[in-house]
Amino acid sequence: MAAAASDMADAQTQWEFSCDLEVDFESEESASIVYATLAVDKELQPDKVKRQMSVSNCKLSVHFEAVEARFLRASYSALLDALTLATKTIEEFGNGLEL
Amino acid sequence: MKKMIALGFEGSANKIGVGVVTLDGTILSNPRHTYITPPGQGFLPRETAQHHFQHILPLVKSALETAQITPKEIDCLCYTKGPGMGAPLQVAAIVVRVLSQLWKKPIVAVNHCIAHIEMGRVVTGADDPVVLYVSGGNTQVIAYSEGRYRIFGETIDIAVGNCLDRFARVLTLSNDPAPGYNIEQLAKKGEQFIDLPYVVKGMDVSFSGILSYIEATAVEKLKNNECTPADLCYSLQENVFAMLVEITERAMAHCDKKDVLIVGGVGCNERLQEMMRTMCSERGGRLFATDDRYCIDNGAMIAYTGLLAFANGTSTPLEESTFTQRFRTDDVEAVWRIKEESEKVNGLKNEST
Image (cartoon, rainbow over all chains, first blue to last red; front, side, top):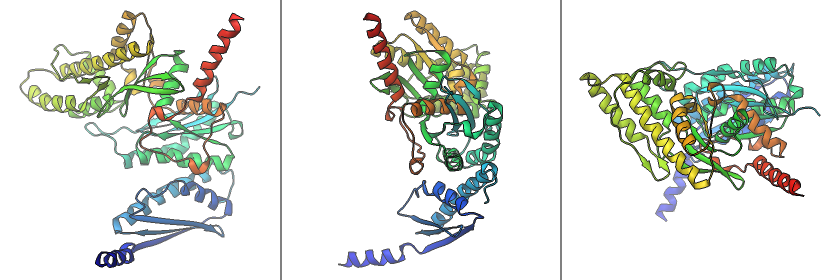
């Protein structure tokens, strides 16, 4: 019983670090392309960082939760690099597709 | 009929390359850029990915321009799924995913090792050789059997190229154009052979102990003027290449094949080619090897191998276009080889009837 109680306390405090990222695009198509591109790569340590993504009204929203600040930082920064590259690729080769 | 065309992306190590290739193996363009670190330093995943990030989009532009094609004419987009360093692999994967959606083109994920083999085969015309794949990240003796490229022998720790590269760092040789190239040049001036551990374990080889040994002895011997850096480069090359020739020869005997194909970055080394050629000629076989244009990682090899798979009905859905640091050569079903083999058998049947 004692073990179960402490497990529950752990579960509540576990994901105490979180942050959100929102990026506005000029078109729904750009937003979905970037979303589909980033969604392929899963978090490498799902027991330490969780990432949820969604797209609506040309806006890409990402929510991060982590057990420690350093995991949050690593995951956020990796996603930002990937997002920048995807966006630049659309910029270069999107043939006028609005970002 | 219009020739099928593929655009291929390679970025598993310190080279980023984009190539345009047709199904018959004609290379329409194959630009690449290498991340060169200062002497004494290796390349790390984060910085390497940053390098690829900066060069990949201009490379796509120049590949299309040189090949004189438009995105419309491309049949599929191929990228290296693995093996390799995670962060650098991701750069090519992301660009391919975006382009696939922009241009409405299918994706083909490619195994890096298989791409070296297929590039080597199409460039040299080697039909069914024993393959020695030697680079900075891989060391394998491979032969095709029953639908797959099978690994007959491999390194049990670091790759032979890694051993050479890291020894180049000890001597602070330049990493331009490649540390292995500078070891090869210096080795030509070697006069004295220094005994080193010779580590062949059955069909496998090991290089990490040799590296530790030479790292420790080098400093000592150089300080006491017992030998020159050139002697050490020469001895290291002779020693590790002899090990590779030994396991390759044993693989040839195992699977009863006469020819050898050397691929991968270390495959440019002319001393390795010379030693292998001697062994092959003693067994009545031939050596097939290529120069740095094809041996060293490039986009065309990925494009060509992806196109072979695509022409045989293989493609990768966007959701599955992942990358992986570990991806074994024998994980891949070589569907195009299965077809080649059955065509050979049918050809023989038709001749006899």
